[in-house]
Length: 390
Image (tube, rainbow, N blue to C red):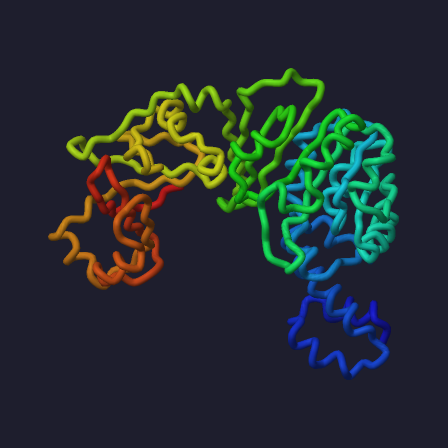
């Protein structure tokens, strides 16, 4: 049995189990086969279009974990549009972003320091017949002699020499602050992927000519912070920010400017007011983007507190980009007795007790369709009993 035959026959099986059984096939390159099977299984979920390409070679686990998903790569292509002729990916990696961003380009450059990834990329790009030229070198050395391009993409590595995760610009490789003076004269637009942990205001302070900021979440988990530098746009201190949450059935997009959030007037809920109606929590991308007051102003909602990023309305606001619950009751002492032994999900937002403490206190079982939501309404700790409706 050849290595490729082994991969084809066993690619849907448990990799740990295969690691024990592959010894039965001395003619099979075990390390390569197991890497390809593990990579394909990850790709089926992460980049299904590429997983369907017969013969596509997959890198090792770390590169598969770090590479963009198909969903986020398509968002990048949407941001850059389809009006560019020549582009470059300065941190090529597994080649996912280069594959999607090169679709409308006449020429594309893939730059990568790791030789094994370059070898894989050359073979993979031939399979899909993309006009991609592979360069085995660092982003810094390529930038010194690079041709003029319409767009460039860079995703600095966020691991230090010990393998630990980092997120500050100065700790990533390459160091953008040192690279940009060499790079920017050769590209009209530069899309930068940064750690979702990085403070947006810090990124804006350190990067020049920022035109737009994008926060990308996938199923309510923030995955990417994207910064677009566009030399053809007028520079401004009032940056446009777009928060995108890719859900299972739809994509939520919320755009605003820094000035809109700074001048927005939030309306706050008082504990003395009726708490009947609906609770809202913005999706994770909006929360990362920091549009707290603006959510109240745009949707006509009352914020539960200055530091409580939940919102309330008496009637349902169906267009709200995030989770929505219908309030059934406020949990008081009498209701606590009725809840003993019941099943519920527990969330806390700016509340003095942790979810596990509430679960223990109310003697609740985990899961189910109902929610207990602990939050401060103004300065009063309040427990809501609610059903999620979105």
